[in-house]
Image 1 (spheres, rainbow, N blue to C red):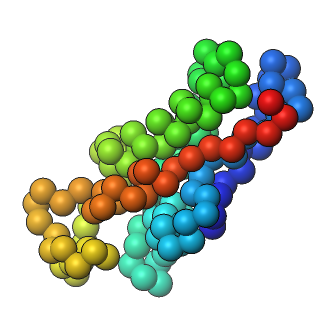
Image 2: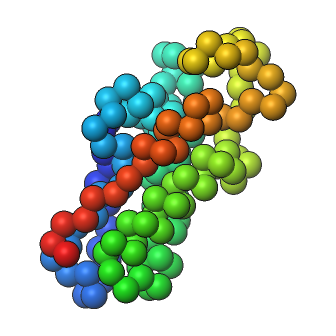
Length: 132
């Protein structure tokens, strides 16, 4: 997964426009993100949706407030980043007992935060708008 396409109708105000929110041009981060976005049971990674969940939840309200498709993109990226910061609004399964080190090699401690080892995943979330 290198990107997720937002196909939900945005209303007449945004007719003919297309917005994509996701991870673009960062294949290693995109693969890591996809494993968490959709879950990877074979690797013992539970689903931790940080893109689809906030987009589905927040898009209707964001579209009402937005004056442009770029406004929607900026607000959705912020919603996705916030989903990571709040660990799915406190709903994500935390580290398993078998998970002793993070991908960076750092040990998991009580202060460790899910999906925020280096900040690269949060920074990589972006949007692309077409038909502007």
